[in-house]
Length: 87
Length: 140
Length: 144
Image (tube, rainbow over all chains, first blue to last red; front, side):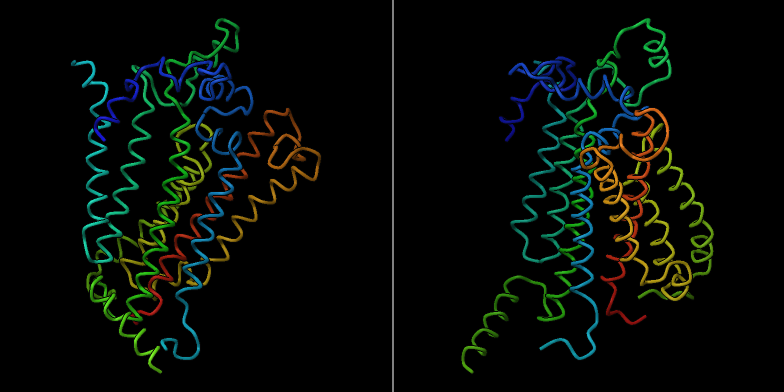
């Protein structure tokens, strides 16, 4: 696994493939677009909140569903029944 | 050579944490220790992603007032992206942290149910008692 | 599980500090636009304020602050707030969760800022309710 981690791009490079304007295939790089246009699109200074709630709001909805389902599972597994529950 | 080590040392430390969590999950026989190993594993993945999102000499991804004024008055055309770190992995890892909390909660609820039913938490003893119940049920 | 008359100092200090933690957590939620923070972080801090009193002062005293049966309905209300913001935006013309079409006045960009605020409040309430409900369910069968 150390061999695999050595193949990653250098940490901290502003020209790494994740940070460029156009990716290798020629399409728009995501992080570049978000940093440029967050203030114009939502009047907000904090880029992380804009991405989380506006550009990728659907993912946040799915994640809330995950934690709601986990709460429901705990509720249903562990409540007391009226009769004795262990068979 | 020194550049290579300085550019990759953080990944290697994170990998040590990952292997510790994996060892705990696979090699320990108590159920609670396996869960602790799973939590360590998840945390190491989160640290790996967040630590791969830095740039040299850049700051937190919240726009500073001086940059906003410059763009507003037309001095500079666009915001310079080399001064703010990449905000995308931070966003994805917020979701991952909350999913980890939910998974740990459900796992502990299941452990409590298993304890109430079989009265033990060690894995070989648990398998023996489950086999005994299966034999009694199939004998009836 | 907890013996509340063991140490009055811990009980008193935790009961006094808990409202201030809640106030700071509200600050973190509402200033998610201008400083690090937002919905998830503030919701976890609110849950921490409630759980502090439950751990330090016993379960009868902490029922006065936040009853055991309020956890799951609060989580449901949070998810409903999120969904209804998206549905209102869809009914009034745009796509699902497209905040430009919300019925508030102003420039299209400012409406997106307000939409983000509603969504973050919903997420904070949901996270708080569910975390307290998970803790209470794990302690269900314990006589205190």
